[in-house]
Image 1 (tube, helix red, strand yellow):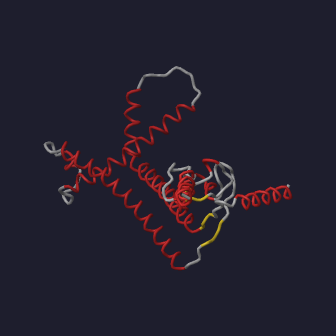
Image 2: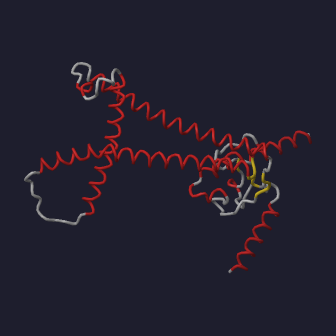
Image 3: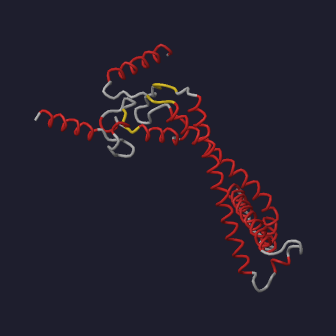
Length: 254
C-alpha cells in the first residue's frame, strides 16, 4: 500500500508539471522551473524554453521571462572546445540550408515562368526573336523568365513608390485629363525599364534581410543550448533570495 501510494503521488506530481508553452507533460526530466512564475506557468520544458529564447523578437526573451520579467540565472557555460566546434558547424549548416532553400524557391519560380513563356511562345516564336542566335533552346525562356521576374518585382516597387507619393501629396486642384493616356503609357514604360535595376536592388535587400534574420535566429538557438538556464524546481526559497538581491541592487542604484 505504501509503495502504491508513493507511486500515485509521484504520478500526480509529474502530471501537475505541465509545460506552459507546449501544454504537455511528457519528458518530465526536461521540465524545469527557471523563474518566479507560479501555478500553471511555473514549469516549462528546457527545449521549449531554448526555442522560445531563440525566436523571441528583440532578443530580450533570451535573458528574461516574458511573464514575470525575471532575469534567468545561467547555471553553467559550456567551454568544451569540441562542443563549441560542433555548435558552430551546426550553425553554418543551418545557414547554408536556409540559403539553399531560398535559392531553390527562386529557381522554382523562374522555371515556372520559363515553361509558361515557352508554352505561350510555341507558335509565334516572338520570344526567340528577341535573343541572338548564340542563345538557343530552353536558355532563351530561362533568361526571359529571369528578366520578367525582376521586371515584375521592380514594377511592383515602382507602383508602391508612386502610390506613396500620391498619398503624401496634398494637392486638390483639377486634374487635366489631356494626355492622361500618354502619361500612363510612359509610366508603364519607365517602370518596365527601371524595373530590372529596382528588382535587382530590392531582391538583394530582401535576401540580405532574410538571411540576417535567419542567421541571428540560428545563432541565438545555438547560444541558448550553450548557456544553460538554472532550474529552481523545488528550490523556490533560493529563487526568492535572488529576487530580494535584485531588488536590493536596484534600490542601491536608485
